[in-house]
Image (cartoon, rainbow, N blue to C red):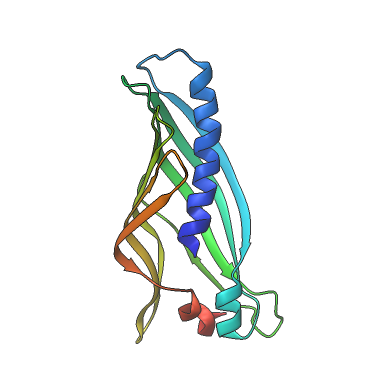
Length: 171
């Protein structure tokens, strides 16, 4: 799922940003960190459905604003996301590509008790085929709460496709 790839890439950016923030004093002035993203993910489920290998290539930059809150929590807020998402196959019989761009903020707050709140608002992209409409979408709100023991609760509201099989005819 593109959302997972984006969350993983953004989580890496947030971890780097948090390490930068932790070295600074607990100042109210935010720190800005620009991270370069260049990541390829293989989609095994979509590949099985399509009958050929399907990949996602994310490239671009993410600017993260890191702030230490009064309670000691560290907030990493991706304020500028300039990522291009390209779906492709390595199968010579499927030379097509599909490109989309995510939009909207990603916010992670690492609380002093060890818990984490992460929220993505906006879209990881959508693909429309003329005459067929939207064949893949990942848009809305995703909120993930992770307690100090690592237990995760995720809630999504919006339009989220189960897999990327809608793009198979385009590749």
